Image 1 (tube, rainbow, N blue to C red):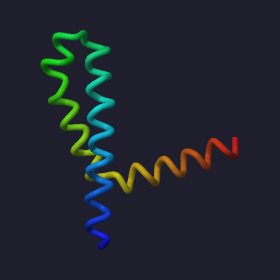
Image 2: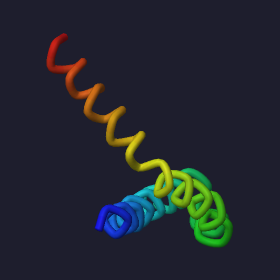
Image 3: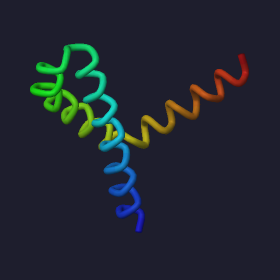
Image 4: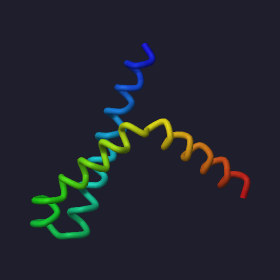
Length: 70
């Protein structure tokens, strides 16, 4: 069951990161380059983020705790 949960959360995280990076590429590099070539770096970042989502979750938790204390 743990492997199934890991895979589901990894896919959700990867999808969200892909969409966010793709929108960023379109906004930064214009419509033609952003839409035409922006999917490649977005896919690479999404795969990395999907594989490392537990680390991202820990960083987010510690960041939130740090911000609450200061």
